[in-house]
Structure formats: C-alpha cells, structure tokens
Length: 301
Image (cartoon, rainbow, N blue to C red; front, side, top):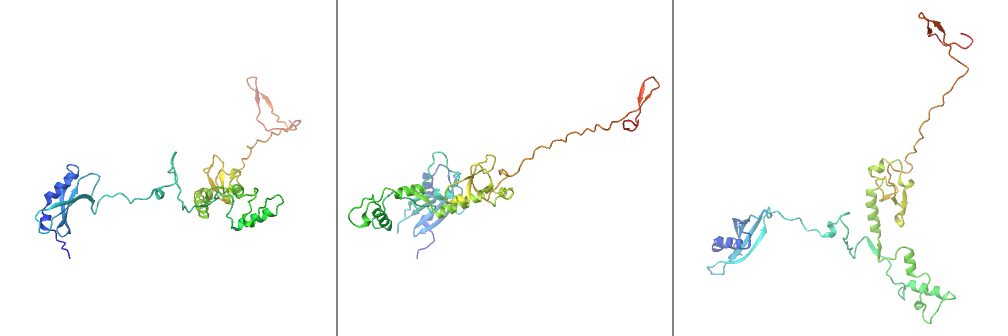
C-alpha cells in the first residue's frame, strides 16, 4: 500500500513548483502556496492560489517527482485546476436542447434530426411499389380487367402500373408528397402548444362573450387539426394571425355586441284647442301690467 504522506524532498520543492507555475501563468497571477498533496510514492502536487480575476477559486497545480533513491526533484506538469469553491461554467447543453421558440432569426438554419419523433416518413418518391407487394398484385389485376390496358406475358405481379391513379398522384392529392410528414406525436404536441397559448383555459377566453367557432373572423385550416383549430383574421384581436382553438374567444368576437341606434327625442305635441289667457290691467304710470293669474279657456275670461 502506498503511503499518503508527501515525500519530504518533493514537499520541500516549493520554489521549483512556483517557478514552473509562474512560467505558464500571467506575471503576478500566482498567489500563496496552499498545500502539498501526495499523489503517489515520491510524487507530490503543490497547489498555489490563482489571482486571475476570471478564475475565482481556481488553483495552480504543479506536480513534482523524484526517482527511487534519487536526490533530485524534477518537474512533472503544471496545470490550472478548479478548487472546491471555484467559479465554473454551467454544464454544457446541446444546442438542440437550448433552442427555444423565437430564437431563430433571418438566415438561421435549423436542421431536423433523422429520428425526430414529430415526423414520420411520407411519400418515398417511388411511383411503382415492390413487385411482390399486395399493392402491386392488386394494381396488376385492375390493369388486366381494363380493355385498353397493355398486358404483358408473365405473372400478374409484373404487369405495368397504370398511368391513372399512380401513387404519386394519390400522394399529391392527399398532401403527402413530402419526404416526411407530421407524426401523431407531432400533431398532439402542436395541438397542446397552441391550446396552451390560445385555448379555452386562458383568461381571455374565460371572459369572452362567445367562442371562436361562431366568430366570423375565424379562418378554417386544412388537415386533421381543422376540427379543433383555425386562424384568427381580426386585426383588433390579441390572436390576430395566430392559430386559435375553436373553444378560444375574446372581446373582438364578430357577434360580441350589437351597437344600438342612438335614441331620438319624441316629436313635440301641440294642442291647438287650448290657449292661455292673460289679463291686462292699467298701471299707475299709464302703462300696463300683466296679471299673473291662472290660465283660462277662451270664452271664459
């Protein structure tokens, strides 16, 4: 068993270790001697404080050694190592895990992994299926039943595929003429993400007078998600241009409120059968004074 007590000659070689550390460090950045640690028999590592501003808690580690029965201590290596309370960079995370929505800018490229769970194989580009596949046999039988079909001698499995109804045309019609399409996992992940932003549980939807399914500004989308989502086309809505759940809603609903017409004052009613009679009595200065008596009907004054 090796002794963990530092070798005496190696432990005393502090000046040799300091000189080695100062040779690789920036001038004046090697601090006081911290400790001498025994690595093995006649192998000792001297630790010096590091004064570099960006390396708080780091230490210069210089390892020295000597041969068996040797009296001369030689230098092994010098390296900067972190101490127990060293300031360290956070653990490295791959870019694919650091990327967040909104991080991409103009000119950025985002490669998609070959085994991305959000995607699955689409149309492979081959218009003719493998000869021994059930699809090929069925297509050959259809060709044989057609009067204008060209039938070549041999097994039905090797008959030429008809020009009409090819796989490429069907894939194009179904919107699958792509190398990869969304998988079920990708569809569910997108639906959960959209519903979290513009779904029925948001505060805006909770206070809305109605849902988007009855709003005139809702633009339908294609695909399997059309039964649950659409695109808002109201410039005054907080979801303008966004994919919204049909259960979402906001105050900008097309039928949120019907503006009432301003009230009009009633037409004045004139009763021409009744008049107000006012009696006049002479004043002291020769004029006339209006008597403030009650109104009397004409013919009764």
